[in-house]
Length: 222
Image (tube, rainbow, N blue to C red; front, side, top):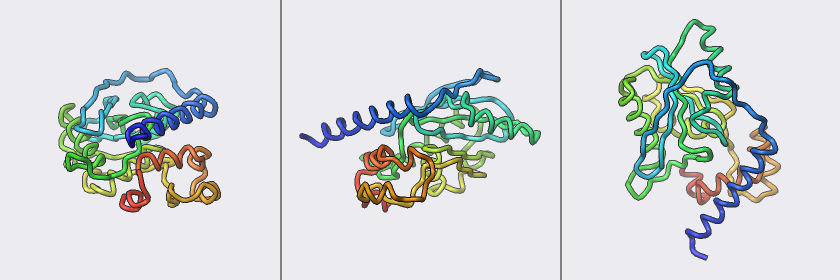
């Protein structure tokens, strides 16, 4: 079996596992939209597509939000997002909020690709391009906050740690982070106590991290 075929089969089995979990354990979360959003996409060289939805507000204050696993740029419809927006509005502020997606299941690993850039660098570049082309200024100069929820928390911290000066504020909500390597034996993984959410304690999450990082060395490097 070639490496490419093995990778395809691994991803297929992992995707089936995720879909089964989503159907059984995750309740419907979409709510009627309070406001319309303007959506679009920015292509990346080798990391796919950065998709986004913008809810217009104060153009001088932008909050970027990366969603959790099983979701997409339509995350502006979810209970988590709408509650966050309501709480912000209670403070008297109405920032522009942009939900961003690099895929329903996509964990950044920070590894350098064939084009000499890491997936983290490509996503940051796509964010900068998106802000520029939608008229929100230059990333690093504009008042831009970064928020990550669940899987988006993992991806957000990968970006923030590599470019903290580009974001004015940074926040995580139930981030998919673990101090335990996904390459430890299954028994050791299942006994760990560094996360509370059920899925992130599961073997499905372990396999996801193994797939996206590839090796123990890559995990440590990231």
